[in-house]
Length: 273
Ligand code: 2HA
Ligand code: ZN
Image 1 (spheres, rainbow, N blue to C red):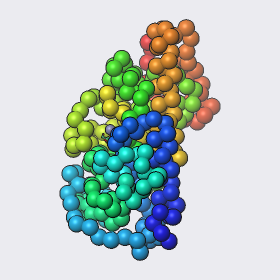
Image 2 (tube, rainbow, N blue to C red; image 1 turned 180 degrees about the vertical axis):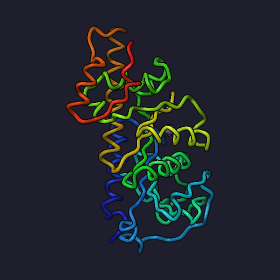
Image 3 (cartoon, helix red, strand yellow; image 1 turned 90 degrees about the vertical axis):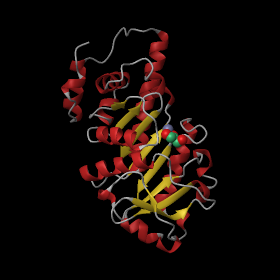
Image 4 (tube, helix red, strand yellow; image 1 turned 60 degrees about the vertical axis):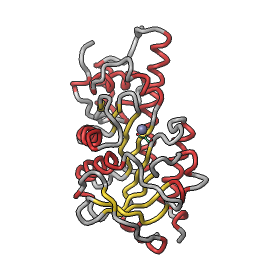
């Protein structure tokens, strides 16, 4: 089978293009990675080659010898659908989880996403918790970014405010959402901070920058990003109309919802305002 015909590659390309169409990927903004299943690696093994080993910039022994499909550093989400072999690549990790090499793609040169340390450290945390987690997605979600200028940068506040703006939110992300204060992107420090939050949540806000989402497949991960960003859009609209709510979903409403939808909503998010 040709590499681009593989179902996981098609799913990756579609998700990248969906993100572009949402307006979350100006220029080379954002990045996406997928931890490839062994049987999927097998499907495309005839298309692969072995590039030079390069350092990851983080140690991820829990991901040793795994393969990832990732967007390229400096590449545009806008171009993924028309020129995937130039925009994305498949990488293989070494047996220590310290180096990677390119097995397919980036035909005109380049490197995997500048946020590779964050992606891989998040993958390692999620894989340890649940083998089914395979997707890490970083997007420059406009309304979430806007809110990081006006809301306190606290997990409790972002979680509660986003939950209140759309009834589906506490069902879609019952564990809540974490917030990383502003940090220099691309390095190990922000990767460590994000992966710490990923131990508790599937979503992390990067103040004044964007969001990271983790999930089991492309639909769930895109849907999670989309749901949180849509809720942020409603909050931005509401705050633009007037700064106080006339009515809202109350802590007791959330408790009733939790019971009927069989989700556990931590009480620390249901604080009295
Ligand atoms: O340019 O989004 O965080 C890619 C990024 C860096
Ligand atoms: Zn970014």
